[in-house]
Image (cartoon, rainbow, N blue to C red; front, side, top):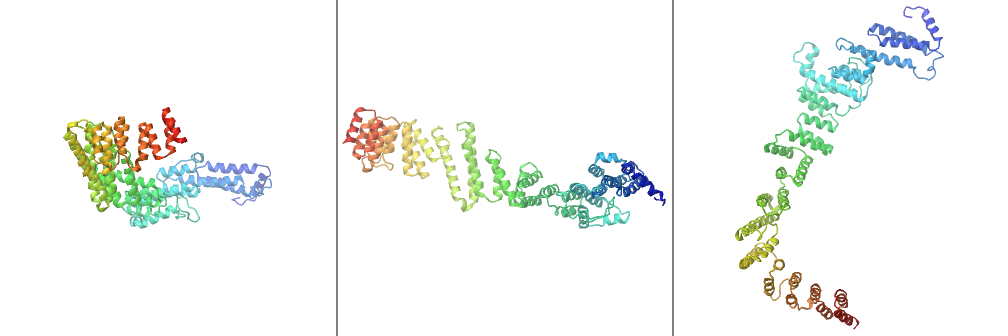
Length: 567
């Protein structure tokens, strides 16, 4: 056919007369072309196969003639031509790969592209991925490698031997970034090792592409190029990690905050912390940097993190106090110190060397809390007053223990009431010093402005629980009309198992009109059923009479109850 002989057409038609022979001949030519390294032989075999394909489509016995689809031989022809074009490109001396078609099929096109990038041939890898129309991620990655290699070449050139080198050396950061963007977008149509035709790919690249090229520019010493490229990255995670890698912690935190991703915000805080030493100075610089430069979301997360670790029992609560002080949240800082005191109160109550150390820590924490509340000004006046009173209470407790030489007189406590209670109870073991002890209790109640009724209730409880019954009786008789009435005294005597005479001493003083129901309740509590029945009759309350009948075990009293109920 090439020489113009008319026998070529006759020879081709004679092949089509035998079913399947033409397809076999075409396939043989394609296979032979794929197995050759010589480009001339490859072209000759492919031209022969192409010539046969023209007759194949006219063959009446061809199964693909009326389907409107290309035949299997045509599809194989196109794939083989593309494969040979790639193989011929990598067979060049500048590449030096002696890869056969079978090896190409075994490695797969993606594997060939990966090996090209690994061997430092990103330009050819990008051209191959575009030419073979591989997946989007593969092509984007290949372009990114090519762009990174371009940026690196602009940074490593030191002398200009040709026009291209001189142009690369003279390029500014913005020009280099612009060329890198073109490469990433695939705008260099027809400039690769395997020229291709068509329009550039206008779809945005995969997430992380701009960030990876920006990191390459940063490693090459092109910080301006890295800043320009990283601004184009749309993926928050990739952009944050890239910014952290180049040391832009504040910008990374801002990106994470805009993305509203708490994990990324924490990563930024942690990476920023790793940039400082582990000593106290480094921790202080880290906290100051986060508070002064990071977005408010990061500051709140750091505060919440240290508050949680401090609440879980961590002894290192100083970072939390430092954060709150730098944020000028003096009230919260003082409350955190106060919580540490409460945590100490929840530990073992036994008095020992450990308890002494615990008391010292309490005073230290409360003193610091008072100082913090003072910094808060008018907002923390109440909290400061309470803290100062607690410090005074601890000092008074220590003074009492030293004065009487006993721990029981004033065990460490956060309550004024419990302190007064323990002082009054201690008088039972020191009857000779009772007057002095009672005076100390009254002095403490006056100092801390304990209400009168509460003080009376505390004294009744203390005297009854410690068995100081004569003192309790004298205390009840000290006033004709106690502020809390006589009922608490009577109840204390009943619960203390005192005699009927002692109980009646308090109940007989309850002669008011409104005391009838209380007298009835006290008689029932003491088991004095006859007196309870008499009181119920005075009240004229049948329900109370029936109650006495149901709970008492005396037949005589039950008959009296029936008489009053019927009558």
